[in-house]
Image (tube, rainbow, N blue to C red; front, side, top):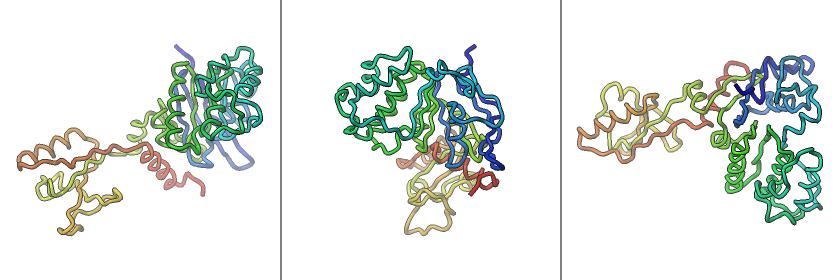
Length: 325
């Protein structure tokens, strides 16, 4: 059985009377991409810096690649790569010169040409670092993290400031790390990024883990339901059986539901039902429409996004008085 790349039990970090991390348990399996999410001030950065060996802990057990970061030596540090949110490589050096210098810090680096090809900078190898675009700069950051041939990669907000095309390209690069067997701990404020890249997600708030699992697991934890909606002109509320009629609500242009009895006849609304039983509900609506000789061409099934789930989880923690303001 493989050992986890990261295993944390009861991690605590205090600054005087303030407890930034309050008993975190965390496990990252070898070869997986785990998204570590949380609002600003949640303890996310403190936790990651402890895992990287840059910050001491107050209490708890921490194992990263089988060693305690607080006492691990240079041989351990060669096994990890870090992409910080911001970096400042020497702007007058060329791209290949920068990666070559960085490679010299490691005992068994990955070939520079291979790394440049991997991150899409092979055609820009002779470009001065200071002349790179923002997206190219981020590719260079990733190259510097990968040139040491790490087993574990920490990615801190890797696509902040990227345009949509550059973000998608970065996602493809990060997703490709699976083929190299690299374990990735990803922090991001982009929920679509986490949903597209992560095998599992862990959410931290006020120094405590409040949810963990796949995006589907988190939606279940937050009691998020799928929304089925349609144009009421195609299937009016009055044609629904009592049970479905009671569950139905109107849907405004912003996607908010309301009381179907408050909408005027001159402006027929979309109707919506929130449900955990998607297949049976859709089948029942189609059967009703069929019996009436109608079609529901406007039928839409919208599952909750990770952003919906995340906001619900954080909101629940806030209402429980667990978040600081």
